[in-house]
Image: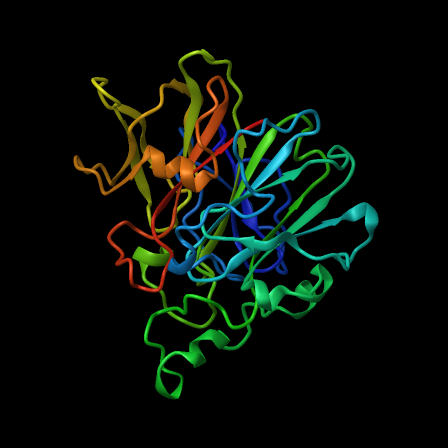
Length: 371
């Protein structure tokens, strides 16, 4: 995440919030502030509850309409918040916003984006409110597009289950007598909460780019594994929100682009990332021993386009997961990197050793730019 220490807290619906900014993560039981250890230690290992993420059926999809982070040029002036879908246990991600200046209730507007984000998708929200004066709450939900059709943000906030709700309805459709064939369904049968975070006035700044990643698992009432959802947090929850600022740094626009790595998988406590060399170039170690919720390097690295990206979990010499650069660009919805621009590449999903037919979303490197 950002250099230095990071406040951590709980969101309005029980959701662990690993954040690098002074944003207000509130909860029904009050704020539970923590700080990241010096030197960029683990930003959070806890999880949470609310909504789900794209299942394996959506894993190969590019970001949806309005969510393409690619080369159409960046957002200028007011700033941007890129929301990333990294929850692994089913559903597309939908976003609702409430501004304090407009009242205490969420508006009767449809959630964004139309059709929802597939797993690994990115949706860019322009910071077009007065970030110095207005508090804004973002609420995230996972559902199928059909389940969201006709519903407003007010409907979703008022009706979705909470931590104390019954066993997720999706389980009843799997197997005989309500016994699931898989640990989680690949699609929810009703919208689930994927967490919420309140941005206090002044927490975000105009002219800057931020990323908000929903990670972990959100199905209620089941016991997931650490390889799929990560370990339970102190509240027995398995879902997290990660908020980071995307760094800006001038790079050689003829050869290089700026790149940082974000560990956004609750199943990966620490990992390193290597960029495979193209042609005769040697591999480049982009980041070493990156703990969950942290961004490294702290200063944006100036790099050339690689042939692929390798994830090395827990200091392993060999790659635990490899993704080609061509696939990374395709899934980002772009045909080519924009030289001279700054990007984050985030790892989302379960541990790489989780079977692709497990019912969970697959591992994925997600690439998205600052503006």
